[in-house]
Image (cartoon, rainbow, N blue to C red; front, side, top):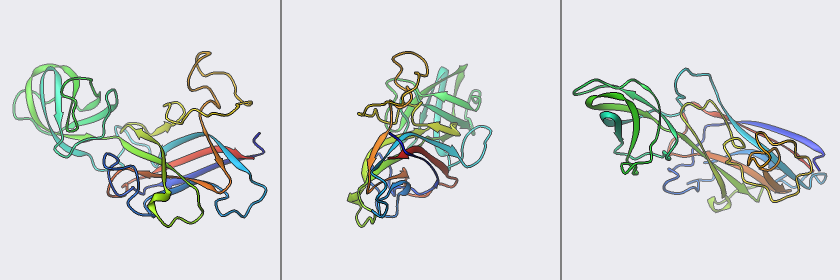
Length: 251
């Protein structure tokens, strides 16, 4: 089916202009970056459409503990035994089960927990401003902490070569990149949608016969005249960006 293989790599630093918790739509036409184009200008009659079978992010540099795409958020913590509750007055974008890096900067009593990457727990303390993590057993302690939150990216389908209105961005899916993920695959993280199309080029499954990330079982089909855009969540641009790599082919 694919006649002309295609791979695109685009540096993404632009943010949508508002947190995705408010809206997925960009606040301005320029608040999203084009990462794949299927002849949106309608100048190449040899193209009928395109198939995208993988999208992956690569951070612009190698880091030791946590990526610094945005400044870590300041918060407070309270730790007792093996449970540490973190509070951010400005809220967070974490999901249960997601990884988060915590930098404990001070303590008022007890012993400060060790800086590390933790898993967000499913507890009654999980709200829009608080969450729990498990720490090594210790005496009661509380103080300040810097939280390295995930970087969220929304992908948009656009049906025109010239964007004049934010309503021309149609949100498709959101990829949430943990603060320690220097490389992120939308296929392996099962973010790229299932594709409703015969997959004659499908290879073996990665793990088992019914694995959900089998090659070619996830992807996007775009017709001629469409393009794929992406934006990071937030009001300001990323301090350090990610390369958004799209691979597929034209037919």
